[in-house]
Length: 417
Image (cartoon, rainbow, N blue to C red):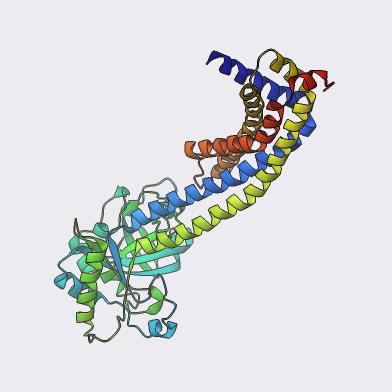
């Protein structure tokens, strides 16, 4: 065992010797490995960050929540769009009937959404904010935390009081460092008393963040907007009871909704039952394509780098032919010579891969600081990068190492290198 560790040490030293003696040639050869590992791992890092964001968004949407809407999140190829267009919109009254007749629902909320509105407080204003009008059980269906204040009471929701909960970005923009609780903001020409502030959630790929959103009671919204308007995207969100699967809840809601809308057995559903896994599945498919593209682009660079490493190893064998002959004449076995050169090739590839990983780490840190999107080089990706590098080292170094191990010792000693 000790002799193999010594051999490994010598092989590593030979690899660094190749770097120091032929710096330009070795660096150019390692460049392909470095670029390839960088491309593959940076794509994996981005995909991992996006997947974490999507999972966080799905968690905030609620994995056990079904959305009763007019439009489906995934369209069937054989269903003409005009059939969707003719569907009626979900209504507040339907939400009340669903609540009374569904046996598997724990809570449900009616919600409409209006974007691009301007909010004002004193001399400050904030454009492109979102306003969501919700029924009382919003806090039971949607996952969120409050950094300050409280949620609506049932009396405030039912009475349509002019009260609001605001997102973290809205609070920071309109109130700076002052406490927004109890103060009045103006939205759509009406004054709203702030009773709560949502904890900052950060950007979300599924647009589920409440950072730039104002929440108001739906009974108050009746006075300032048409709840049956298409542009408000009215929906009913239903959360299932503990232990109830999404499939069970979906079938329960389908039966109740068909009964509410008095659809005959042969008629198609005129509503959509959506769930967050539809979005996550679509995004996961996109991530698979992006990951494949990373493999393809990085693979070409690694292929070029592999040929470069093979070239270095052939040169190394030629330069050390005399030394190989001496080693074999002193009793060195073929596998000993093979291992020596193979370890050298692997070391060179690991150096190239390590440089690529270092660049990924620096880029991830810079991107996180600049765009505020959490990019982290995970240990799994580091191990993947090093394993790929080692594999390329084995593949590209095997033939030169095997050639060296098969040299005739007498002919090798006679060689001038």
